[in-house]
Image (cartoon, rainbow, N blue to C red):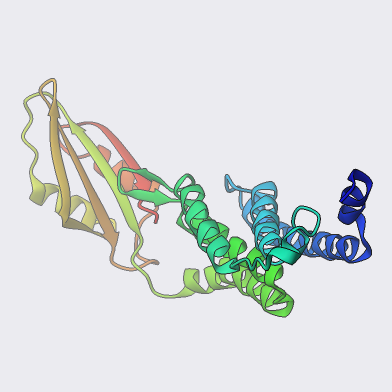
Length: 248
């Protein structure tokens, strides 16, 4: 095969047709990824439209690439009888997305944030793969279901009975011995129960630190963080404190 013939093999009609189809699939995967990414971006999450759009589009591109082995390297695989296995590509995508999802999960004391964002990145990778293999309707349904889960379901969850948790750190004055019963009584006055199984104790420079979680008896009965902070600040021997919602 001459150089000109080899060059033209990349631009044969079937080859160009396959490239156009791949580009349209990539565009569709990008748009669907941007839809999910906008929901995360709107709520101020670290991973926004660009991350989701790229994950979806690249996932679709990798699956599409493995679906057209007859056009690889200027149709050289046609005569070789080579057959690609898209399932291996999908397996590699799932593994790689796992590392990306781990990067958005943050653990701070008793709070874990980023789980929903990690799950949605995993979802949008599946959306891209579904577009890549031609399941367009299913991919659109998955996007609509994901966005609904992160918006509508979140509102429903907020209305259902629940017991919100608050992570507490109390640092006591030097040589002061805390009284767990006094702490239990103090938080109970604000509608919270101390989860004794969550208590961890440390000591630095003569000061004892207690880390624990308190659970609201009911969503409506639990005091706000400022009111709970005022209650804990009034405890005997407390020098410093830190409160945050124990989210996960």
